[in-house]
Length: 268
Length: 349
Image (cartoon, rainbow over all chains, first blue to last red; front, side, top):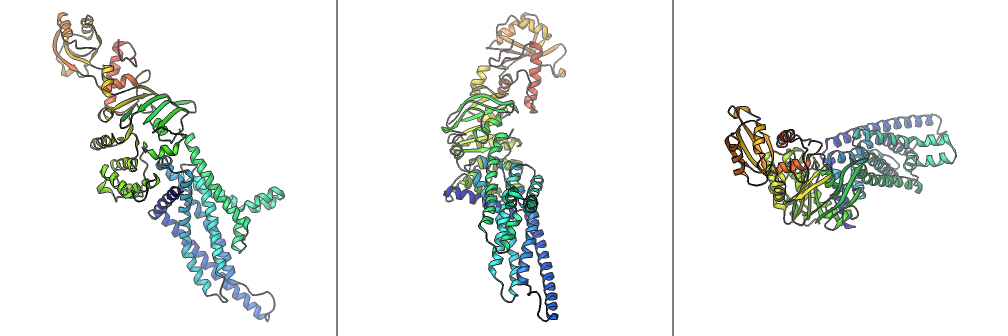
């Protein structure tokens, strides 16, 4: 067990180090922070303007009509919603090189002939890339802390943390599936495109399933990443949502380990 | 230490290796010699547990490579055809990573990495990123990663390919220094490599092992290319006719590739004989009334042995210069002997 942990840790550290020394990783980080910051300020500005207009309207009506808007809650909701859209584009780019690079450089031959299981390699890689993504999220928490710190009455920190937990779960699911796809091909571009396509399908499958109806529709709608993600960021912790994310992560790891093993049989 | 029994590997319908059997004893260096595409890399990969064999058994340190893959992986160091390197890592960082995934405890790692760096002459490059290293240094890092965990068995697939002559000599010295405490199998298509570094040679051609022996025994067994070089005033036909009477002469071939070297009317010939028949040859030439101007014994080379074993119906496809030279000579032999070259016996009629 200790050896397996050591192996996972070795792969994990190697992956992290490759991000630190890769200009590509900095580029991704830059784009991500720019987009996230841009969306955050837009959302904040719009909601505050809307809320101000709404309050004005209410005052003119003499305190009658609709209840006041919960601006902090809406900010978090909308921001996490837009964050998931950015992640949809960024995550395939993070997962695309996980195995394609190993295949291209021939280092997969080193890993496959070392006393380390495919599972340990896959898990170490997933943890590495996930850590990189979590690092990308960190500065965003500072924006949110500043904005929400100004809210009165104080906003519940629990919802924010739960929302970010949901982002991480979503990211882990997509990265795990993306890792599997990257283990299938030598081409990074192909791996990114296929992962992106798969993620889009899993994202919108909810809508398709609803129009389909029946038991088949029920099953398909349960696979939707969007549905479970929306549940979580609204503060609804449903064990079935957690289970769906966990299944995606496990499936990705399992398929990766299998595909790397199968690679040895088809290599010519 | 390494035992291979009736090993076969089939890709689709083509057989990469067919029924290979050989053995490497503890502490020995076995050279796995063959032209490109003979199945060397496939065999290496099977031994390293990277590819499963279609049929047969291969054991390393008494563990079957496929059934007991993990046990074998712990006991081998493997340098694939292209050294598996992470360009963004430093030499020392990479070797530490390899030691880690090979299961070396944290406490022993610095010392093991240090000793691999020293052995492979990488001391001044230790903190350089692998991306910035030249081809020769990368190859050395490749060898360092194969020996960093001090495995009992080392598998090297073409360890000197792409190196300059000085680096090749260094790498050969390094490999030789590893023998004794390690059992080594190395594949190559370069002949001098095996004759200078290996205790034993297995020659593989078209997926089959055609000979296994020490370089010396192979030479004496084949007696290939042994004989005399003559400079005679006479044509090939007359010389051949003159030498008919000498017992043991198996081949007379023309060496006149450069006419300016020899004076008018004189030609150079290579005569192959089984034993020391210099006296008889000289007597036969002079007795036939031909002028004998020079006579020089020529030794057999491993190159000849290799070509005899690996050249049958299809020619060796290789761009290596020494090989190409011998190929030309081989073609000359073929023309004059009207016989294809026999595999095992190496006798040409």
